[in-house]
Length: 288
Figure 1 (cartoon, rainbow, N blue to C red):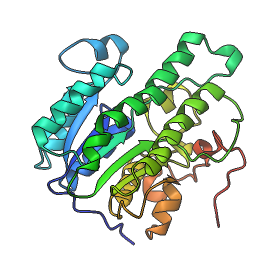
Figure 2: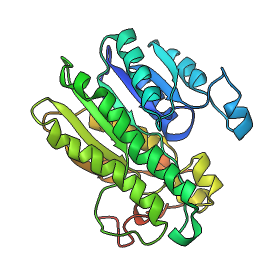
Figure 3: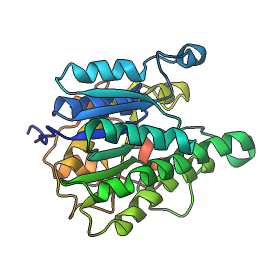
Figure 4: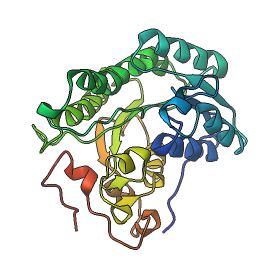
């Protein structure tokens, strides 16, 4: 069964962390459905940050690829840790497009280490990028989203809050669950304003630079970022007044939408284990 996808013509999405991986996949998927895209991140062709860090992809490259679908795309350098660096791009996006209807907190820092092995400055980085960054971006757009004429969305790439402790790598887990907590709490703050506030998270590890860098399994354990972008599209197909306050796994939401065969997202013929879900919930098992 093919997945029904929404028509996003005339809408605009502000997405953090679009230079590569999941963020780029989401940007391209929305652009393909007619959505204008504000491509944000720290890696820009206007500086040598990406070259110094050995990173591939820039906000401008993603914007150009989005424009190939016939939409408008605006690349803006963004450091989610700094208030002014968030507020100015938010204002620039609204000035350019008039309305921003979709805001997605995707940018994240990752450092998989136990408490005793993680330096304090790395803990601060996780907290500032993931939790503070989500807070600053949401705060920059909350008032605007309340006034959007059409459906509005505030989403986060973050896991369900199902446990009171992590099996390991607690600092990273805390920072990602903080993203979820803020987003789900905003569903209450924005109730009555038709702003859907939801979090989405992959069951399996996703093929990204971070996954490869930290050695999270092998290609047999990974899926492509498209499973996450399809999850976002499925959320955007719904009514934000009714579908809000949810933290969903990609497999479960897409299964509800009629997807039965997930092999299209696998990198190999293997059956990827629920490694990403078990990073936060070691007892997680796929439903039959």
